[in-house]
Image 1 (cartoon, rainbow, N blue to C red):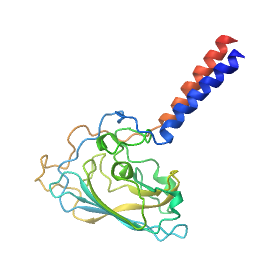
Image 2: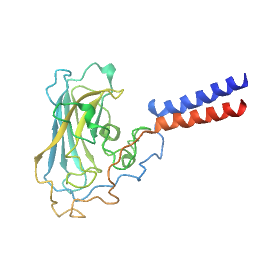
Image 3: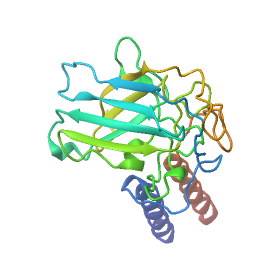
Length: 244
């Protein structure tokens, strides 16, 4: 009897802790394993990368997302223009920059995870009041989910780069649109539509298209929720073995 009570209690603890991030609880102070994202300076002025969503038979979502170097070379100004979203019950809809480009067959799953050079992971959710602690590619987390159709928004993101080389560079990556449960609806690659991304304008503080702070190499994230479940499972097994 005591064993059954103990197992039930610890199982409830494990489920509660594993489910909390999935339910959308922000945990203050959460950041990347390599620290906060660095503000990107020295981006080449005049450079724009644009992702245009394809005419897909599986979804009516259309539009584009364009990122242009900020006038002072620090960060990137984004202009998002999207329409044709499905039933609002599937939202709010999410959009992220993913680590890999969309292959020729259009498979959005092949884009892998979000752009995340600081190894922050998706859970717990991003705190928009502290964007430096979020995944660099988590545009929805930092700047708001898609809640209307059509959807239009403009914002400055300080943690992305338009110059080739740094891990914060997004021009060789993709954008993916999701439902609220993270199902991938459509995706598109960013392509250079204006300027020269291999050189800086030389007027920004660094003048060389680099980031201020560390510039880590991207690394895959294995996920925190699964680790929490395994740890709790190990605790249950240990107690059970002790009582037996």
